[in-house]
Length: 159
Image (cartoon, rainbow, N blue to C red; front, side, top):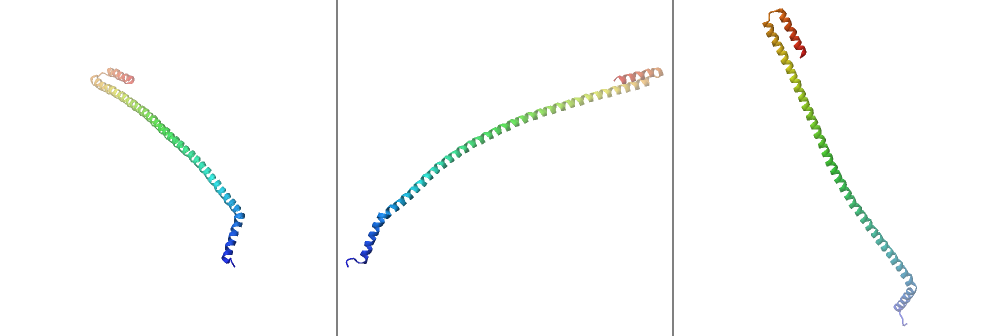
């Protein structure tokens, strides 16, 4: 025997490889091509999603910047409103203080005028009483006394 068992195994292996090459290479190659195509499609889809994600991220960054600008504007307007309210409140407080001061001055003037009137009335009463005492002690005559008393009553009623 020229070919031993190892030779037959080698020949069988070569024949198997030739048959596998002829009939198995095409399906194997197609399978690998399909797989490569699927991977390529998935990579393209991933790239597309990545681009969309970048666009969305950029959009949200722009929205964030706009929101920050709007917040800054709102804060600035609020500060301006607060200053205006403070100035307005200060003006109102000053007006109220001035009005209260004027009312106090008017009350003081009124009280002063009332006190002057009371002093004048008291002075007139004291003068009349003093005149009556002096005249009553100096005059003995009854008729003169009646006319003086009548004059005192007239003076007292007129004041």
